[in-house]
Length: 286
Image (cartoon, rainbow, N blue to C red; front, side, top):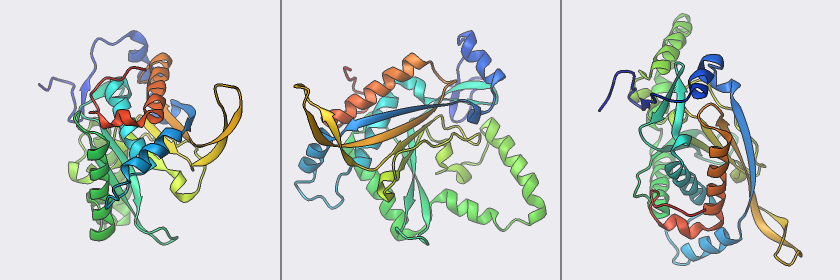
């Protein structure tokens, strides 16, 4: 039931501790509260898992990005404080768990981009997430633009002298959660998490800045897969396929211990991908 102070996309957190109450008042801008975390993931088990999943030659092959999206969504499901956001000086719990990413229609300098937006369910597994990513990628690459891009195209027709006022109005509506759904339907900065697969364009993992627009408190950057040295149980060095990931989180939404545990869970899921066969809501020991 919606109470006074709740938003369409979030429930106002009441009775929170003083630190979390004061932080938005002292540091109101999301971009001033970026915390960066890096992890290197051993992909030995993921590569074996993908080989097994693709043995039946599915029409759309399973890949690392789908594993990463599912693992991140499961982590947020298990660690719900990651699904908080701050808007208009208040702390909210988001009503659903969503993930967004950009789709490159054609890998060329002139290739356009579109936005994908996944609304996860507690019953989702890697199979249903794989199917939803396939559906959205196929639609964008074969049918055209996503809803938010269509709305943004329409805004380009507005006369120049009205743009400044329109921008101020949009920021006001965004701050209060009143932006029309048709405009922000696939806006990545309204999602629980934004993922960027830099490995697909042969780049190392870095960090993505947070944005004052929207409500996103978490970014996950995936780098290029490479063989790197690891030490086995006997202390001997061996080369294994691995990937670096970079996370940016709004440090106001939770404390360091909670985030540390979340990162440990994410790493556990990526190193044991068979856990992604189970529903997102199924608890994991880590």
